[in-house]
Amino acid sequence: MTETGSAPTALSIVGPGRAGGSIASAAARAGVEVNLIGRESADHSFDGQCLLLCLPDADIAAFAASVGAGEGRPKLIGHVSGATPLDPLLAAGAADGCFSLHPLQTLPDGQADLIGAPAAIAGSSEQARATAAGLARVLGMLPFEVDEGDRVAYHAAASIASNFLVTLEQSAADLLGGIGVENPREVLAPLVRRSLENWIADGPAALTGPIARGDEHTVERHRQAISQSEPGLLPLYDALAGATRKMGAA
Image 1 (spheres, rainbow, N blue to C red):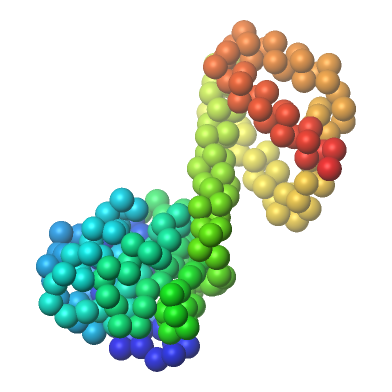
Image 2 (cartoon, helix red, strand yellow):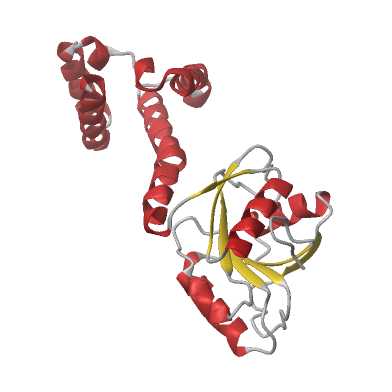
């Protein structure tokens, strides 16, 4: 089913959701034989297969245990969780070990484009790590390893970069909307895109604005305006202002 240092030629994917659907589509385009099945199929025989679980974190251990209690054993078993370690997969009794492959990309639907996205990988054996790396490359992704002990910190960083970015920008849009600005997302979009591009190019040196200039008078005026217009945003503003001061002073 697999060879050391290569991707699987066939892949059974459990979970036809956003991650499972996206990986299945990319794998099929790359010529991998794909079997996409529902998460209720724990009693299915996965004997000798390369099995990839695209399930919620809380369901991984139970499904792996069900696989281990069934007939036959998979050759390899993996998951796509960013925060879950490999230990829950051990119950499946896979002959060549277990692995993880987490696309570092937002997956809004089951047809998300994975090409060029980084992928965090890990494996319990050389064979498992090689398979994870090979599969990532076949899917068009760029694999990099994350140690088991650092997995949760890695996933926290991913959540800050993606989820919290949406929260932050929507908070800004709500503030504009609250003072009557129409289409606030469209108004803010050019600023957001340019700021992101500047950060990608220059990191912390891309910082601009009153805190970077040391203009605390304007910061205090911001706080007063937010208190009057959207008081619920003030704790977020204060926390971000504090983090920005610390970054600017580094």
